[in-house]
Image (tube, rainbow, N blue to C red):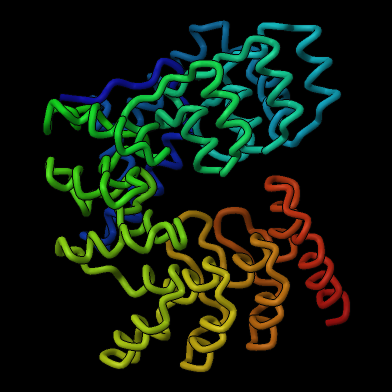
Length: 391
């Protein structure tokens, strides 16, 4: 049976989903093209071709005048995401209904509400302003891969915002219970057995990817949750767990015991040098795998990255999915000056461009500063820009 399109389908989000699906498709079919991934997405929603899906969405937009204010809504969402308190307050005073508007995400795919953006941006004043103006604490999440505001507070570590949502009665379903690590509630929601996992989890893939405690992971495995199914971004549960830092280590170990062999990049993302040493001893080429170095940079483990570079890792390594950025882009985005200096000293190209945006590492640092608010990105941008001027 075909999946139903969201009530407010976003062609931009579907394009990005197709690109992510292509990454997963190429694991099975190395010669797969973007058109193959687009066709698979179209058929998932019951259309014979990508062109037919695109035409349907464009017709839907043109037939619904409520979409005509997308530009204004988009600007409001950008102001919320960037923390422009005065602009947000003025917009709400002029148009109170904006508090629960739905519009394009300012930076990537999907359609979101202001409360989603306030949580992502981390501005408590704007968050409180939206709550006071009547923001729906449960959110309209269908067009944002079913990620609720409560789930976002946990994912972004916005603990005070999480408490505020819970105090106002935010709904706690299975996904929320899992990411909150509420084992008692998880057990209660899973009492019906495997049927409790029939619904599609947020982000697609496996319910297992949302487990945050060993108890929940083991219970989901008992009920038949798929330990290897990738989500819409191409990430399997073990890859998701490796992005949780120390909290993810026991979850990765549970999957390893269940028969899932973590890739070397998982070890790198967890900064597990011992495990990497073992696999590299068996296959020295792993040290030169771009994905391994990029994952080590993501972990922020300076000593591990230095060791991999000594083992022959490419300082101009590049991701094979998403924006296809380079190693120095990753350090710049994270605001990690020491890592950026290490890569430059090893020969990283300070003017290298990512594939999707054609942006330099210094540009990534500036964009990250604007989007994430990470002040450490300023020092990285200044360092790289000084090198650009002097070379």
